[in-house]
Picture 1 (cartoon, rainbow, N blue to C red):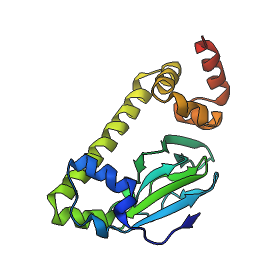
Picture 2 (tube, one colour):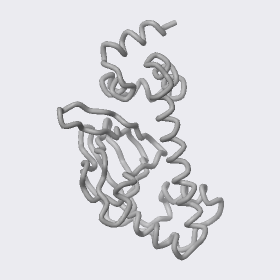
Picture 3 (spheres, one colour):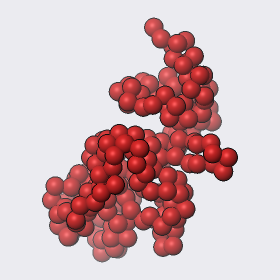
Amino acid sequence: MSFTKDKPASDALLLVLLQNLAGQPLPESEGLKLKRVQLAAGQTLFEADQPHPYVYLVRKGLLKLHYLLANGDEWVKSFSHEGMFFGSLTALKVGGLSSFEVMALEDSELERVDYFELEALAARHPTWLLALYRAMQHFAALKEARERELLTLNPEQRYAAFAQAHASLSERLPKKDLARYLGVTPVSLSRIRARLRP
């Protein structure tokens, strides 16, 4: 993993995303301290149970956000690819620790900002507060949709929904990671794909 020095916010995709969420320019944005992070495929961005109060936006590449269980099993909670943002909510508070691990599935480039810097801006400017509020709304909606799929759809339906919503992404994912995301074995995933193949 490599970091650049602080980059000016003027060319930051994360800033564009936050401005779009706020619906207007964000004051003091020129002083936002952003870092670019480069990850090779297979590298870990951060581990669980570590202080990590950062928000990321994926400029290019693909990452998996996952839990590692005590018995060595893995549960994939989500994937992040170009244009998506993420962070561990449990780490975005004073003394908080990350609850999951993030690993690059492809060579990836990300933007990183300290969440406490965003909070400080939100404390001074209502437009920043609105941007963060809408970002949390977006994150909560994704989480709710994921929970609904896990609780109400069978594995075949989950795969069909994922393939329809993320057609290009499903081709980029290793089969074992997609299976873990869907809550099935790789063998079961192969059978589901065979049944649904036209």
